Length: 169
Image (cartoon, rainbow, N blue to C red):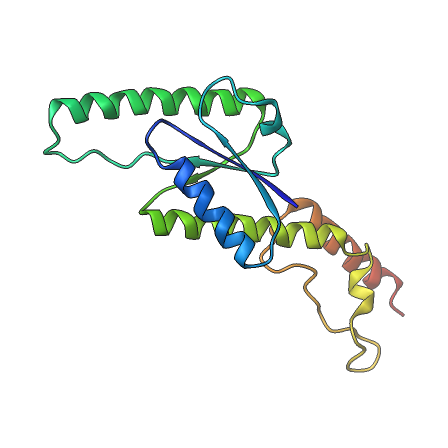
């Protein structure tokens, strides 16, 4: 089960994103627990989340009135405090911007990336050895995970390749 946290300044749509993300993940057959962290200090279970999404602030319209300017200034201050708290707690996060639909799409992409990384970690260390034999004794390249870019995963894959080259006749 994925553990996802959604946080952000007041009135950034974090609750709406959490609900839409929960529905979309459920519809795709993915179990997820989504925590909405709206106020500081963060709940203790935030640090246990595998993915933290921060609602980004949209630019203020140049024609905004004084009340909107003040509200935006307060949102920026809250956003800065949240970012500082996340950094202080050592929580990595992904900032989500755009319309409601764009935010859901970005959140789903981040969740999918996390799921791919979990699959890659679950693969056996010698996953490349399971590749079918082709062209004599050479094995076809098999991606253990697509677009992973996890340094540990890349290191393991490259180490396996170097070991295979060293043991080749």
